[in-house]
Image (cartoon, rainbow, N blue to C red; front, side, top):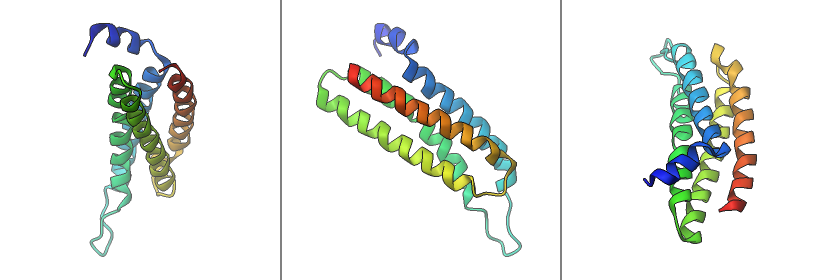
Length: 131
């Protein structure tokens, strides 16, 4: 990656918000994992544990898509990465909604994550206009 691009991205609010979302989702997931990592009396595992991993994976994928969109020269390629960001944020919010129905102490922090994702979407819209 271009060092000049790296320097400008690290100062950009969208990039910083994506990193913050990743840190929050990682903490929430690790907090919820202990509660959701149980097996029922019938031998079934709690399927919500996968959604706790999904929020980490989806939030982790935000930063590379921002970098790829910034690095592209053609608007069609930029738009492709911006659409990917939209899909990731949509899935991230849906995963949070599913996890809010769980019986875990960590679910109390999910509204914070959803709020941060909404702020990210606002920043993303403004950022898209500058590309």
